[in-house]
Length: 442
Image (tube, rainbow, N blue to C red; front, top):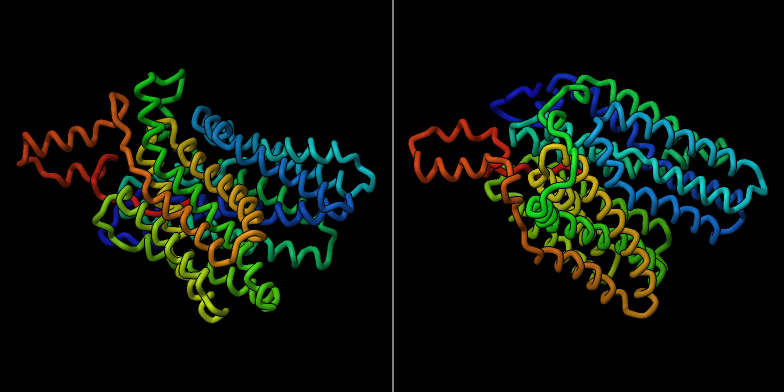
């Protein structure tokens, strides 16, 4: 169903049959993830009158959502989006509505709120990993896939910026629980439109190779090694980015700059990430993805170290924007590497592991920096957060090998050695092609 193009571009990606409808539907559903956190936090604080209780309930909601993500992704891999994703989304939406009703009623026991939130988080549908798996299956052309992943990553970045703004506008005229209900409607409607698209219904190669049993030991070890580098880098990026949020607040408070300054700095981070993602996707890279990933991680780390040395807001904003230039490229490249190393029938899970790493790293980074910022000077805290990303750049990349590895790379190497006259162009669509598959997301 992909359409080849002599000059691949973002427009060419959206000209693929049904791509615009499918991508738009996925974005509608994923917008729910940008609205639900703030709406739920506001609803819980108003209902319980306690930040501690609200924080605990939100932590349970986030924990079950993050750490059960690979399991939910495995259901999509095994049963397909229609059979797994839609029931998940409808149950998630229903539980959000129950949670909204519980918050609306004063005196609801805290245990009821906690259990309902944990159950809702456990049902969060993996729309992002599934959309990226659809892109990878339908776009064998590496240049088109590079742009599709970049477009996906930048769009997701913007969703998490616009989501809280949408909730802020809504709570100005309605109670916060309306934001929770809106999140439920978005995920249900978006997922329904997504799974009914012909792009997700197309049989594709992964659908014929299901995971019917445990993988042999060597094969499983190969998958783990292939995922090590992208997962570690994704986690490090999550740590560093979440650290920036808190460090910027501390920076502004230390210099009496006000909350407006914080908003500008964090907007610069998001803007830099969006620009970096678009540029990364448009470049025709000659180096392989596993070679580029350490460069992006190290660039993020060095920029954060430099941001800690900024004497004022005028230098902090460009330093943080430069750090943002590496965020989306690092994450989208991590997703590409995870997909390249994924066996048929494991694509959604591979992406979900990177998703889990980013979110878990974000939680860990916020907690760790919250402790450090009270004990160390801010430049040191910036340096520590940057060092995490720089250290991740040292993790070696491993290609998935063994008998389970797709035969493309092996046959390519043999053809170069023993049959040099065979045209190499016919090898380009194979998964093991040495041309890079850059960018995308999370």
